[in-house]
Every structure is written in C-alpha cells, then in structure tokens.
Length: 135
Image (tube, rainbow, N blue to C red; front, side, top):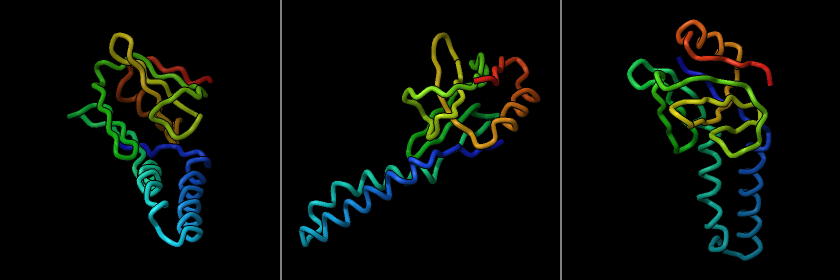
C-alpha cells in the first residue's frame, strides 16, 4: 500500500525562489556562470516534491522515499506511531507529521496526505503497533 506525502506550501515556493534568483543572477551578470551553483539545489528541492511517499511492502517493510533518499524499516521493529506537529528535522515536508518509533531508541518522522487511511491500514494489517492520533 502506498501513501503520498503531505507537502507544505513552503516547499513549492523555495525552488521557485531559487530558480528566480538563478535567472536574475544570469541576466544581471550576462552569463550563467554565477547561477550554476543554484541548479543542484533546485534539482534537489524539486525531487522532494516529485518523490515523496511511504510504502508498505511485505518483502521490505516500511519504505520511506523522499527525493533521492530512501529509508527502509522492518515492520517487526516498529513499536508505535504518533501524530505530532514537531518542527525538528525529519523525512517530512510538512509540519503535520507522524513519528515512527522503531528498534531500541530510533525514530523517524514522515507526513502523509491521508492520515486517517494510513492509521486505518495500520490497524487492519499491523494491530500490534501502538497508535496515538492526537497531536
């Protein structure tokens, strides 16, 4: 089962602003030399918008994909999932996040567009995982 990631408006504005800055720099300078360092940043930010999902697979477990990055967590290790509005750094492009606690002391934050469906899927297929929906 695949769940698309939730994306805050900020993540749409940032690559557009960097692209506008690159164009303005190239126009003002008359060459693209000074604008080239901004291109990798724009590519990275666009990749975050295009490839942002969480997938449950029987073979691999929980696969979190964000941009060029992928993290896989064994579902047997997942202890709990709780809703939060934390602003700490995470694999999430929104402040409406879910904290996945797994292993001994590990955790990762994600965001999904449809949290209700995500929690419903967890309860149906992985009832042993503790769920806290309230923020």
